[in-house]
Image (cartoon, rainbow, N blue to C red; front, side):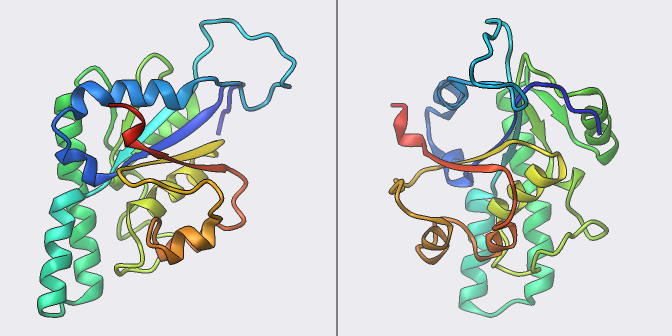
Length: 215
């Protein structure tokens, strides 16, 4: 994998935000707020940076109401956990397509080959790179994540962060989060999923941002 001196950041857009009426107008502002101020991953803080230097921003999207419907049905009458897990993964392609339609200027990465090419040649720094989950997580590339409700798009974003050697993971959520909560507190409070514990020793930074930061 070829890494540049640029910061590489993975941002997960919480699926619940898909129902926010002003998402097409507020999301670019949120991404700008997340990105500022930035520094390249491999340079010292004292380095003077050119104004044109931008991070590589990789974006994935949660399942939102589509996945919540399956969860509700499972609570009414228990479904096969593994089968339901992969059905939820399939549904993530639909939210990917919707965000792609809402932001057609973003760079689409929707195959494993195109993800590998971007990892080799570098991701776009002029627009966000919208990554389909099927590029890095499917039945043939499962990692060590459990195939049930313990794994959500939070852990999938963490997997993408590790797979691409990213420097930071930002989870963009609709809820408010106390900055003092550590990862275990976030898991126990249901802010992030249980499977996220598999990434306790990852060397990337975790940041959780409330979408309420931008009106």
